Image (cartoon, rainbow, N blue to C red):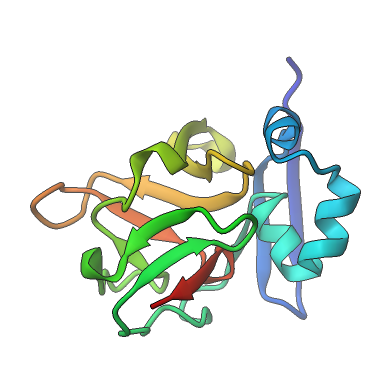
Amino acid sequence: MKAVIIITILHTSAIVTFGQSNNAEMNKKANKTEQQWAKELGHAKYQVLRQCGTEAPFTGKYVNHKKDGYYHCAGCGAKLFSSKTKYDSGSGWPSFYALADSSNIIEVVDNSLGMARTEIKCSNCGGHLGHVFNDGPNPTGLRYCINSISLEFGE
């Protein structure tokens, strides 16, 4: 399997793409072509959810969001995180220490940028959400570092 590294800097939307774009298997599950995703999501969401982009830190709408409810995948609506597990990690992206439903997330090894990280994607649509790190608070010790643009909030 040939991996293609995509590096794109979009000055107008402050989104940088670093990663592997291979959502073919997830497209079968979500039953959409990349052209359909691009049209439905719009440019900025498409860059993050489908091409593994990253928002600039401290720019996302959910960084300082404090309401009670759930965060869902912006691509398909799958429930991902509870506001009860959201915390301020100081990273500039919404951070959570636990998943609302672990069946809605898949972990993928991400070797882009010359380092090994764990990317997290929506298991329903394959949308790129962010990464998980082992430097979070108790009780899990995990920090799910998520792009705001990958999320929709509902109370």
